[in-house]
Image (cartoon, rainbow, N blue to C red; front, top):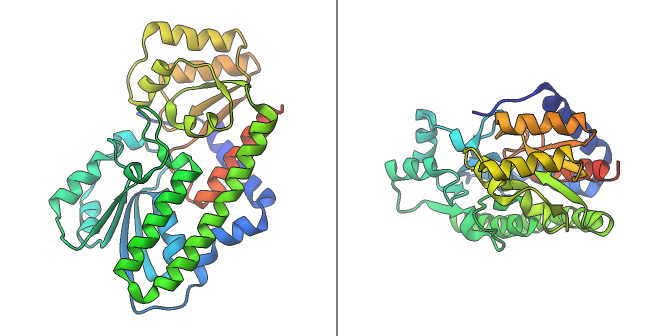
Length: 307
């Protein structure tokens, strides 16, 4: 079961402050561009399994959509989430559903099966992703995947609400353009810190660590086991620990929504050795947009790598 440590909560608050101070004005404008959408008689009911997909739908749909995001609490392990009656009601009234798929949110498939609709559009992020890593369903961490998923959302909204198609085309382009800030920051980190050895407690951050050229030393078997809620193989655990205690890594990156006694021990050992510990989340903090969430984490990682 996931739980939070106080330092992680303070770190997330710091990230919020960091992005509000340092994010490019154009990015912040893009993230909130849909809030001034013109009133419309048509409102598309959207249900997103995860709030980062819901945020994409809000940015593209503006006042022409009503979005319910089921997974919106960074304190909850998405892998352990159990759907509720309210979730079922939301699905029953939905016209567009966005889920991640690939086993990440199987509870959504059960909700959809319990409330079939021939007119409902269902988008699956993993299926739409243009870049997929082996045994890694966290596709939204790659900006190219985010772009592909956003484009599918725009097409779906235009199909459900053709009268506002031109509006959706415009806001989609704004969203896609804003992703360039993420790509640029990743390119900057790669240019300065490629081949820097880092540790990962699980697989989620591979979608950014690998494109940035970071040298991930943690055994994949360790990362995969933690991501799936299992104990890692003993030899992989020993290797991951020795990489920390031997100061072989520059930063320890951990998913604070899948914390276990093993990862908590790694964090403690990293801090004891003076190795920066960098938390990331699967669920988007509620006070951020997708772009500002990604940028805040990248800015903090860049700071720690240069520490």
